[in-house]
Length: 459
Image (cartoon, rainbow, N blue to C red; front, top):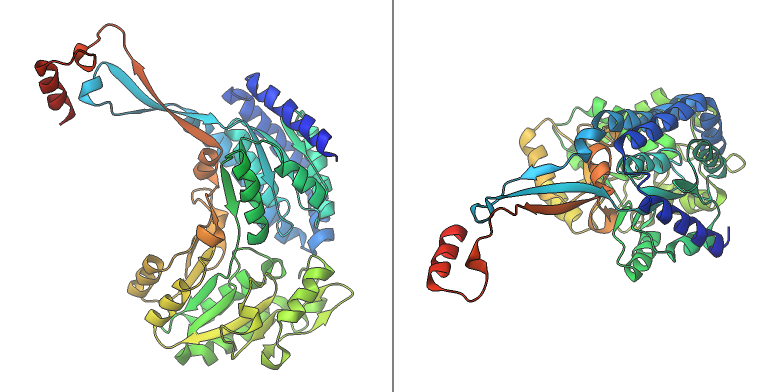
């Protein structure tokens, strides 16, 4: 798609927004209802597309993508009227004959740029929030997941007029053309390097942004943890989607006294969950493309692999792989892994672990396994991170009641449920002043009596 075509789409959407067509709550609910029906009708097609791009099973596609989108739609349908309602706030005595309120209002025309690792979820879920808030939207799915991008395009063409929701497919040229446009809000999910470019372009128009990025999310295993359960939940979270999850445990950081016992449990769990030969498991996914496959092989130090490590270059599949005796200077610790490599590091005290984590860029997620509530409170209070779990991994992003997002190097802003609605809304602060009384004290010429009254009201 050319830049001129993209310009026409943005203008068409802005005209449509200013017509007021998206402001009625009933119209937003109907739009969400139609989208939900279409997703239900095309569920098998969506799962097939995701399988072609990432090798996900039907169950995993529904659990981690399709089902979560449907859940977000249901949540918005239930709560949209309450969220869109004006909220009255306290008015000071000096303005007692007035009404003060906040009015949630859509930004206008928004841009949603999504990644390839959860291509359906991370495109449609923010779109649901944007529609619920009353915006028009231009959606740009990833070029790395073409089959899912195509089914998204088909669904959104069926459900929406292009003036309301449009899909732009393609690669870098289209990304650049989109970022050169004046949007009212930009929502981006992806890498830190591209996030910086998004923010730089947004600054040209002072466009507000939400950046959902990533980072090296630590998984702390403290010595009082239930190691069997910890291993089970770590293996699930780490190797879900073949490790290509922005909130996957990037590395294990465990107490040195329990490392060997933990590693034994992790090896057992990998075999229990993925079989003796994971590359033959039809429910185990693949790496998105050859570029990322080779990048992961470059991060894998075969001398430190203690479990897994086998791969199939023809199918781009790489076994769940555990690496021991890793230090923070190893290559695998110098960038976000985003694949099925699990390095294990140790600490001697929880204070040392907290200090080390805080010396690194803020991660998108943090996980702590412990039976000591005091330790859990200490870690979650003293460490900086976007969100996370105590005694589990990744599932904090599966509830619409919890906002999801990072801060600092892992992003800015959040979404899901109420957070998502207000991410795509601007709260107008309005004071409704009555006309039947007009106190003279604020007008010149100022008099002593006026000064005393002002002091009285503003104390």
